[in-house]
Length: 577
Image (cartoon, rainbow, N blue to C red; front, side):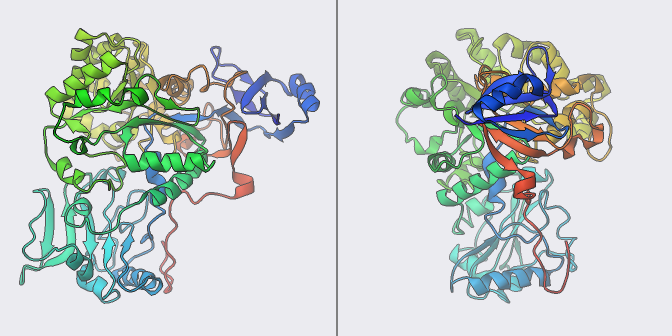
């Protein structure tokens, strides 16, 4: 049995008494003891445990992201970056370099224009003040199809989304003067003189449609790419102290396969609880969704199947009365940036029947949109939900009545503070008025009602520390106004929402989320103490070391800093980022 003794710092246990200790002992994949170095020195000597001097650093339980989209972060590294481009000439230079390394006729697909994580400031950030078009790309790639992808709109949460194709790519995808836009929210920009497409596509919705419809001929992410991306994502999330994730939006079949690939290779360093994202369009016309669900009971019921590292259980559900998602779903098995099935939604009546069957069969349901709470209430009238820990996520506005319903139903709540406090808090306040301000992501009120609240990143950004800061500071982007100050959490409560509540979310409160003997040895040694650091520095905290299952999976000093975002491309003429 291997052993490890961390000492000389502050060990924030988050046990029932919120005890802060000096040292923690790890044996194998479990925590053996918590106390002072003097108390644990004999244990360490007896088994020859390695010792790590924390040098005053703070240790917390490994963070648990309640709605992570872990798979997306690494995908940003699978495609060539255009982040260093400051002119169309720069874009051409980057593409020319890619062409030089490609086979004749090989597709070249790149990241969007702009710098991660938001890809903002385009096209005004280019010297020409416009998007490059097919002709600009043709000059350096006459024989290779080139497609510059659009962003996943929720990275920036502003519109429009823009993607660009050269002439070869348009021809291979059959896009010409006669091609209609796939939806009213899509513009195929055309030459006013000829009516021919310029290669620029403008979309006014947050989930890309063009790449899954008229440009579906461009290659997407295969399982091998997704597995590579997952390995990178795990390192990035580990670098922020995250050791477990819950994928509440559900995962598509290819993402599940990628997780299983990484698990099978022994490379998994973030524990993952996956929820199933059904692709109803693939189920065929026979049988209702509720009937189909009965065939899945063996692997979705209860805690599903898997182990402490990888588990699949429960079903994602939403109401979808038809629209653009049906068009996106035609690209299956491709799901692009999403990683979930676009056709996971059903009409309201069918969704209700699905949820009733889930409740009858012991399958947990997850919903993230406001209209799902009403459906949960309807199901509860027939089949009580208390004790089942159904999940209600992405809470934006919640009245006192809503909160009482959450408590009565025994729901677990996951949040999206990056969107509804930071990005849209001021907008929500302007919309509903100051008299209803306390309805905006009412974290304190939800917790006071006894409803567990698990903080979540939604992968924007991958670090949990901005979400902890949102819960504590509740500032709005732009205005800086504190949104619903009465709904602030203190730092200890926010840290518990990023650890203890996440363990409860996945029925693992007896296994992780706290630092106590017998629990899984999932820990993060932090760059600053989240309980005492200046409030404005909370979002910048990173992990110095991260331990999962007793193994150090991230060590900033030994491994060097992870480039958490794709580095800017080096431009020969010296144009910097």
